[in-house]
Image (cartoon, rainbow, N blue to C red; front, top):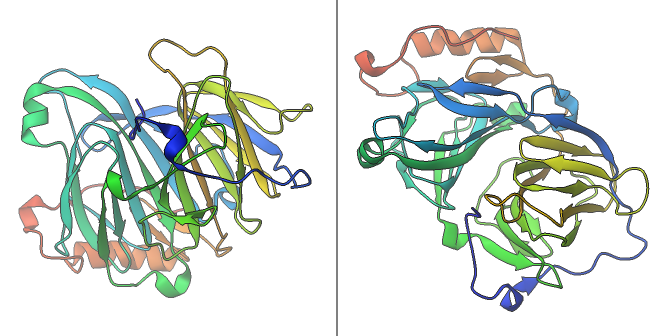
Length: 331
């Protein structure tokens, strides 16, 4: 289900028609997200798996969490864990999640809400369903995106942004066939509430069956479209570059001025429309050294992050509640 609905989409501000001579962004690749498990065992799709890092930059990693219908007692989250060198963006489409961190940030996010946490120089945090949801079970669906920070900001002070669904800028296409929720960045002069260190845009779009979305896009941004649910196509409507897409697939676009996608005429009963997350940002173009929950520029910096974490320099969480196990390999 879309995270935001409106009673009359035609009353929303509309994105302008793309100029006839605007350069279409062609599709470089469409990849399938493999499934796995995160934290204490909740199911995820690894949205960026198999895509070269230079095509994702400034984004590093994204998990689609669910969509899953939990039975009573089944909802799971994560234990306390550290991060350094990037930002985590958790967007909840259905269900409820609680966040707390070692710098005082935290709260509860639910349908359409986003938490934007800058790990910067180091933070500990935990994400989990509230006790009531664990007891009752229920639908859970969301995503977590990791946004890289440039070298000069990797040790920035941690911060937390609580972005409510009602703060998102809502737009539509001229014919009302698509609803866009701007979470961060700018679309056609309308800004989302998220404050970002790295210049970027994040949009959740719901495209009705048979509808077309031609979205003006900054030339200096890369362009990624991930299908949360439903079916459709990406790329110019004319020519061999048009590609079919469905739930759990990521499309990477080449350079240009316009991103084009369309909803399939016929959708599955449980997915009434094509729902996608559209991402773009200015590539940082710096070396990436990634070790578990730390994303730095060099292997030595990652090893230093492990050392600082083990020495308790990431915050004031009681020692017995902080995991000290295997945090992953250094790459």
